[in-house]
Amino acid sequence: MKILIKSSLNLTLKTDCLVVAIKPAKKLGTQQGELNSATGGLINRLQDGDQFSADKSEIIAAPAPEGIGAKRLLLLGVGADKKLDAESIKDVTSKLAKHLSGTGIRDVTFELNALIAKSDVETVVRHLVESIGDTEYKYIMQPKSARGAKASKEIKLTISCADRAQANAAKKAASVGQAISNGKTLAKDLGNMPGNVCTPTYLANQAKKMAKSHGLKVKILNEKEMGELGMGSLLSVSKGSREPAKLIVMEYKGAKNKKEAPHALVGKGLTFDAGGISLKPSPKMDEMKYDMCGAASVFGAILAAAELELPINVVAVVPSSENLPDGIANKPGDVVTSMSGQTIEILNTDAEGRLILCDALTYTERFKPQSVIDIATLTGAVIVALGHQTAGVMGNDQELVDDILSAGETSLDHAWQLPIKETYKKQLKSDFADLANIGGPSAGTITAACFLSYFTEKFRWAHLDIAGTAWGGSAGKLASGRAVPILTQYLMDRC
Ligand code: BES
Ligand code: MN
Ligand code: ZN
Image 1 (cartoon, rainbow, N blue to C red):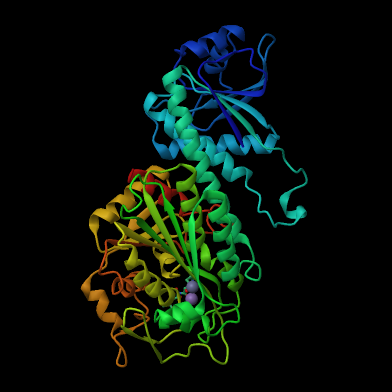
Image 2: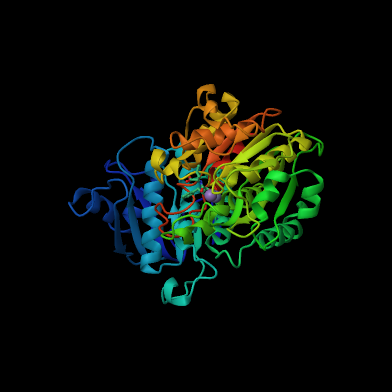
């Protein structure tokens, strides 16, 4: 998408489509007044008539009259509320984005007029850009037949503002929207790729590419190096697979002080999870190619942070492996020793995410991070609890959890807190090791987080379970690009 910001409305500007936001109120802003006169009172007539009531997300197309540079007008209802809540704004922008792709309009000018409250400008622009990014997303490896016939041209979006101040706000918001959108696109592409393409080695190569394109520092640890560090838990999972496991470390240093403590993002990178010897049932097993969406979110968020040149340091740690049944795969009852020294009895080989994350979390200690967030498609139970709308968040530091919840509200990539309490930790007792890797049938999302909490005592930590939100929601079978927005917002809020 190409974005241009103008600081005033020029009615003779050549554009395929001029979008004007309209409220049901009769009084028009100055620019709309001009447009209204230029169109012989068209807007007033539409407002008066029963064809268009300017309700939220209502869209009406009209041919543009002579003397106006636009080929057509698109009137976009934004409802009567003085200040719009972000959720309604997102509704309006995604409706508009769908209209543009449905009609094939590629060159569009959005008039940000006085009817949009000053405080709403940033939200509108950011979500407009993000909505267009979502609607226009095409999976790079999808066959032509599934993509629809017309290979669509890139959208050119011009945002015409009321004045210079509005233009500055719009410019900032557009770059945020664009960076998040680019991060989401990367996360979606990685997620949508099949397990035979997107392997741990593929993810490692992706990191190397980003080192070159975005100046990140990248280090890839192979199995031998992980063995030397004592990552017995992580390596027990990859033992059953022929694809070598990788521990991918990416560093973005945007802070003035390169030694400033970083924020750490740790992403579960199971490029395929068959369950191992505790084999999953066949229906929907294909969806377990998405078990690296935590990793994909981390790739997307660090890309967005680099594009926005955020003045902070970020370190990404991605443990990546497959989980397959094999003659030497983990067996129920096996006991392994994690890098932390704690021993783990593997009662279910399908609870593998926590087995690779725990060693990655211990490894993260060496960066002395300000905060650590792990992101993982960790439990089916979170889908039962929160559906495909909301991610589960838990942690050992309420302030950090609150920061994440607030980032979810701003970015509209929502999360909801579940409790980590001592009483749940009892469920992880093992007769044969320090910890069991499962906590029984109840509170599965919480006991998974409790397990991780034994490996995060040295820092402020929170865990995001995105098993419900990373795919399968409004994005259908495709990956959604979540949690890129909430993570990027969290990082932006630290600046
Ligand atoms: N990757 C799965 C979690 C998952 C399941 C995500 C379904 C999305 C949809 C994870 O590795 C897993 O298998 N978890 C088990 C844990 C159980 C064995 C304690 C689960 O949720 O069933
Ligand atoms: Mn599993
Ligand atoms: Zn898994």
